[in-house]
Length: 129
Image (tube, rainbow, N blue to C red; front, side, top):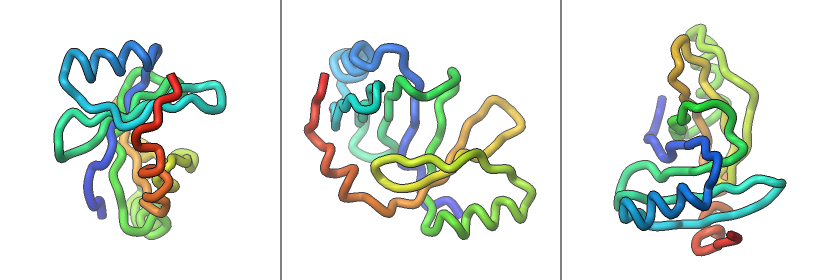
C-alpha cells in the first residue's frame, strides 16, 4: 500500500533555529523556508536520497509524523478503514492531500497522494525568513 516514505514532519518551536542546526550543524541542504498563515515551515534534505525533513511550527504534539506516499489516497483510506485502522482528519500540504493514520502508541504516521508535485517544487529556493 505504501509507495515510499517521502517526509518526516517534525514539530518545531523555532524553525529558524532548527534550520541552522540541520544545515550548519548537520550539513543538510535547505530546500525552502516559508512563512504563511501565521506559521513557518521549512524543508531540509539531510541526505541525497530518502525522506526530507519538514520543520513546522503549527504541528501539534512532540512526536514526528512519518508521511508515506500512496498511489491513490481514497483507495488507501478505504483499504485501511476496511482493516479497522482509524484515520484522522484530512490535511493538505504543497504536494497533495493526506490523512493521519491513528496508532495505538505514540507513533504518528500519515499517508498522502502526490497530486501537486509541481507546487512543492515551486517552493524550492524560497526563503521568507
